[in-house]
Amino acid sequence: MAPGAQLYGRTVTHGDDPGQMALTYDDGPNDPHTLRLLELLAKHNARATFFLIGRYVRQRPDIARAIQAAGHEIGNHTFTHPNLIFLSARKLRQELDDCNKALEDTLGAKPRLFRPPFGGRRPNVLRTARALGMTPIMWSITGFDWSAKSPGYVIGKVTRQVDSHNGKHGEIILLHDGGHLAFGADRSHTVTATQRLLEMYAGKEFVSVSWLKGFVAETLMTERD
Ligand SMILES: [Zn+2]
Image (cartoon, rainbow, N blue to C red; front, side, top):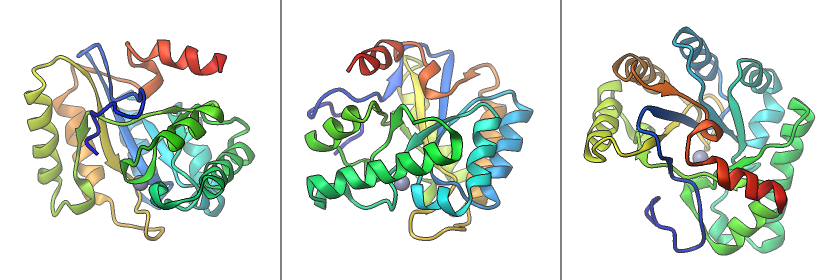
């Protein structure tokens, strides 16, 4: 399932304005890497989007609140990060509901964005997310940071993909501030890679996903559902 495929209904993979870039971080909150990212993003006046795992939010609500307080956007990445393809409709709904409850209890607001674990999109996954008022968000660039041996590996992957798109997109970059297998995954390569990306693309506006031009229409549609 390539992230660009739209077989199962519309999902957001990028914006229209190449002057913008949306950094997205999955599988947090995580300690200490999420907070290090917040420091870096603040230094560069950049906004990003964090897709949080509900059970980690229950574990470290303080970090989730720090993300919110810094002005970043927060989305649902399920409660336990299962592969949704293998779940019954009831369990799928439970995973999304439980994550939403954790986020609402912690942040006082329901998320409007959803990213499926492992990029798994099936009609029932997308329908369920939309029924809960969330827009499914994919990506146009993969950082491959889950297997990176160095920050340079991540930088190389991102810059090559950005170049291959010839500046046509407001790119959504997939990165990870946590690990779905256990809390506390080492994401120092991602932190360093982020610092260098912020410097390399300093001419771009780093926005959270909802601020990407070309994404506004679908957000409004979701609100009317
Ligand atoms: Zn994930």
